[in-house]
Structure formats: C-alpha cells, structure tokens
Amino acid sequence: MWLVSDADTSIYILGTMHALPRGTDWAGGRVAQAIDAADELMLELPPAELASAGEVFRTLAPRNGPLAIEARLSGKALTGFRALEASGRSFGEDGLDDWAVMVLMGQRVAQNAGLSPSDGVEAGLTAKFEAAGKPIGGFETARGQLMLFEKLDPQTQRVLLTRAAEEASDAVKQVRTLTAAWGRGDIHALEKVINEDIDSVPAAREAIITDRNRRWSAWVRRRMEQPGTVLVAVGAGHLVGSDGVPAMIEAGGMTVTRAQ
Image (cartoon, rainbow, N blue to C red):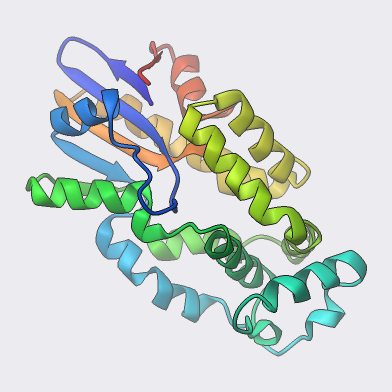
C-alpha cells in the first residue's frame, strides 16, 4: 500500500489480489487504519458492474463462427490446455474468442490453486464499506474492462492464449508464488512474476496494464484537489514497476510513500 497526501487530502493506494485462499488475513496494520480513515473506496469495478461482469462476458465472448482448439494450439500448448480443461468442466472453447478462452483458463487455475473471488480483497473491502455506509466507486465498467481484451488484434490474442496454454502445467504453482509474494509485500518478486508473464506481448501490456495505469494515476492527481481520504484498491500488478501507478504519480511531481 502507498500513500499520496497533502494538507487536506490523503489517498491510499492498495494493491489487491482479486482471489485469495479462504481465511487470508490481509486487513491488518496500516490497511485497517486506511479502511477506517477512508471516506470512500475506489475499485477497478464498482459492485454493480462486478455483478454484471458474467453477463457481459457471455455477450462478448462468442466467436462469429466455431473454431476447434486444435486449429489454434498444437504441441505443448494443446497438451497443457487439454490437461487444464480435464480438471473441471469443458470450457466450450470452440465457440469462444481466444481471449475468452484465456480468461476461463485463468479462472480454472485460480480455482485449482484454492483461490476464490469471494475471499479476495475487493469482496472484503466492499463488505466493510457497505456495512459502514461509505460510498464505493469504480474506474471502469465491466464492458469497458472486457473490451480491452476483445479489441486486441487476433495475433495478440493468439499469442496470449498460446502462452497461457504452454504454461498451464506450472500455472497453479505460479499463482501460489504470486500470492505468497503479495502476502509478504515483496514488490520485487511481484514485478518479476508479472513482467515475465506480459512483457513478451507489448500490445497486451500497453492495453491491459500501462494505459489503465495512466488513467488511474491521472484520476489520483485530480482527486488530490479535493479534501478527504480515499482508499483506492486495484490489482497489485498495476502498482509495481516503472509504469506502475505509484511511479506514474511520482513522475507527475507528487510524493508517494510506501505505507505498508
């Protein structure tokens, strides 16, 4: 967690995990203090948008025409995909865009790693702020968020799907490593895992990470002009590295301090 503050405004920026193992204790120390102090919460998606994400996914995910997975993947990638699919129900991949298949694979990996969105940071924060009667906002809509993937060019989508399938056999271990690094607050380990996953696909990094970080850091700079205390909570991957939100805010001339 980071803090940007001046005489009458404080904005805490918390890096989250969207899904966690049951019983994970993440709301202690300075995080608890920030939750208590904050007048409002800003998430990637506000609660109503998050609730609609499944329906929006079902609208955007279908292909114009079916395409067998064997026509998209081969070798290690096809083997990895089939093994992951065999761990649960069929993905129904033939009728889905490449990006949608990748999203479903990511959800399956999280499930296999024992992680659940209902135990994630966003779910916990939403419950706390709703119970306290504090407002909850969001940077994006469910449709806007999923359109980031939908609008990727076909080649980039295929590269992302292929990489996810090739790494499927190690994906549960990688997710657990990422979760453990987050739990330790180890931003260098987080950056290493995240960068290895996305740096080789520049178009995806720009759309899914960097562009959004620019928008969110600009929002923080504008919000600093109003008094009050805000807790911003977004995926931890958006807060590390030279194009992370804290770095972008600092590059704009504001002081950002590590709070926890």
